[in-house]
Length: 165
Image 1: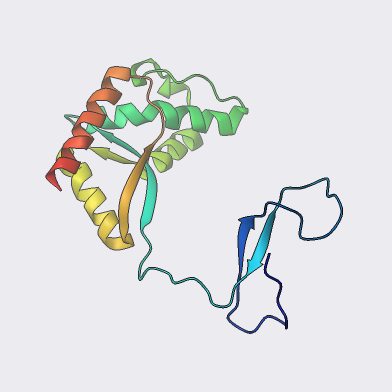
Image 2 (image 1 turned 60 degrees about the vertical axis):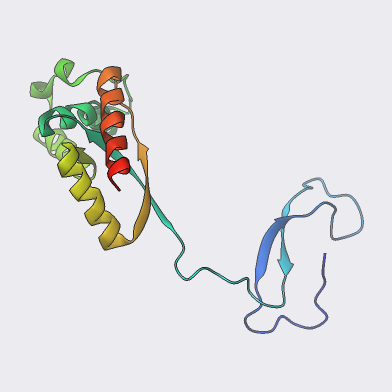
């Protein structure tokens, strides 16, 4: 490991690396560890590093069907906040929306408002808008859907957007 001969000048930075042997003599119980390596100059950075965003995204033939794909996870999340139990996801048609409190319904709406869902055209416009506004170059689709066939169709439709671009 390089050792500085003088105090670190301004602009010198430590880069974490996994060192193969302890920097000090003697055994260390916590070895191996990440240690900073002192460098003469900071590494060059790209002009603009890529920005990757993770989102719950659902695409279907109708906006309502796409929303129903994401509703089970939003419902389970909101109930978990109220009860402390994250129950298994059930299809949207099996959810008892009438049993929810006003606050729980509002939270489900807020959760879904942070997701991207709709028809191919709607989702494409939303993702292009987010990409342009925030400089996002790639999206990672997250979340779960108990409707396996609906999820497969959603992924197929989402892939069609990628083919267009």
